Image 1 (cartoon, rainbow, N blue to C red):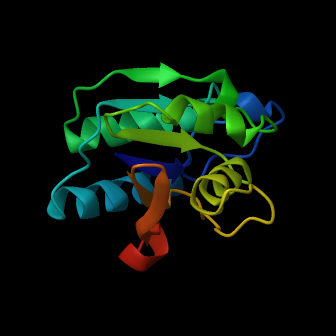
Image 2: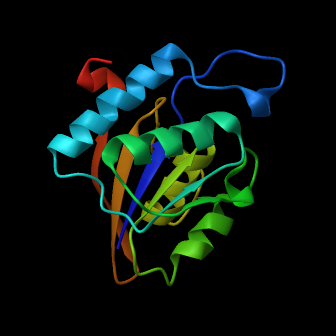
Length: 155
């Protein structure tokens, strides 16, 4: 089973943090990442989870659209900044179908560290905006498959 941890793309500044939409830079980041993923064979997932913050939802929607994914998008309150990453890790325990998770830092790095090393702290990963970290689970153990960032793709 695979999980793809995706940090939201660059967003505009604003007083209401939860309502900040993607910036032009963020939209360019998504285009670059989607193009790379499409050329590499796509992103085969059964569902996309995202936080309730606008920039996370918009990133999930844009990636799904640009990759031609016709899968459910689900808002997960456990992906909001400040929530315990163990809540999402628990949802992955019995999951059989790959999922993309669009969220925020430091939550995603803590989740990746928890899955791979068994502890959320200290974080072992850093996800830049619109980065994708692919993990694979065999039995009870998670391993890193690859990581990409928009900067590596020229965005």
